[in-house]
Length: 106
Image (cartoon, rainbow, N blue to C red; front, side):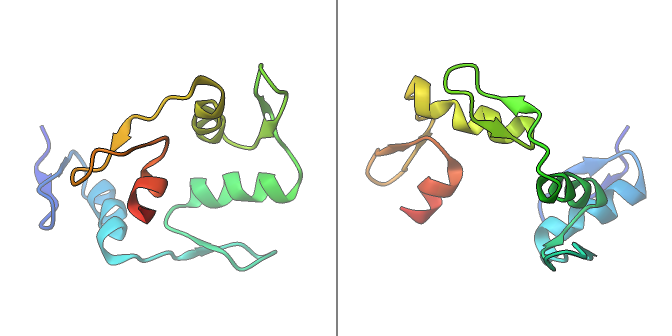
């Protein structure tokens, strides 16, 4: 059961705390600041992952080229370089992109 619904996108949550954290997606609130560089994050886990990058920790390595990443999701995004995967298509012209960011920039 997910009784806590987001008023912006109707996504449901089992706990009110999870809804409050989700609302930051819509408000842009980023209350967790890195003490080293000042970059702000919407959640504590994202700040902690960022801090590992300052420490130089890159435990996720690409098996094809050896490049290291601080997050597993960054490694997964990088692997599109080797596979040529372009899952994100422009609805207007059909051009395809390897990341949502590149599609949005287009």
